[in-house]
Amino acid sequence: MNKSFIVAGIGTEIGKTLISAIFTQALQADYWKPIQSGNPEEADALFIKKMTQLPDLKVWDSSYVLSQPLSPHTAAEIDGVTIDLEKIQLPQTQNSLIVELAGGILVPINDHQTNLDLIKKLDLPILLVSKNYLGSINHTLLTYQILKDNHIPIMGIVFNGPSNPSGEKFILKYTQLPVVLRVQQEEEITPETIIKYAKSISN
Image (cartoon, rainbow, N blue to C red):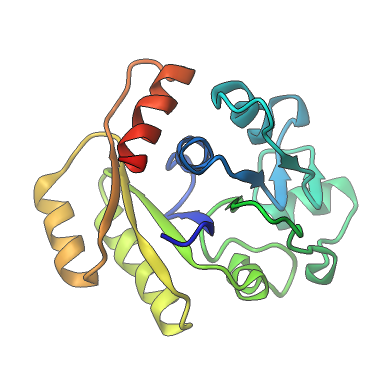
């Protein structure tokens, strides 16, 4: 497995931060979210720090921290800033690095660029996170197709939450992607939950 990669979802509220925490724990990696949209006091980086049990965890500062939990371009407009792709630079680290996107692949980051442009700039493979809901098969396949058409390498797929064997079977047959991890619907997310899934990756 490539030790540095981007955790991307098929939409919002898919569980990218949860999956990022699991892989940060498993690989004892650094964590970075280039664009953080939402209350900085409840930022995803704080979840990573709280849930991972890594005494030397390195969380790199976001290039942009926006106050509203909206798409980056809208949140930036409200805050009176413009997201400049050239100002987002991949952290230089000798360690593994988990990068978490804000939103889906085609979420706008300014008035003419999307997360896809950011992915191309960072030049890292994708770990795709899917979650079962009505329409999720379509969203998963569309995301896969966009990445494929743009020659973005995809390491594999993570299924998060309630299982849908029929849907997962079709997704895997269509995409030919390997399943890297399955995360069940958990009643509560704790550091022990993160460690449990991290060990399943390490083993």
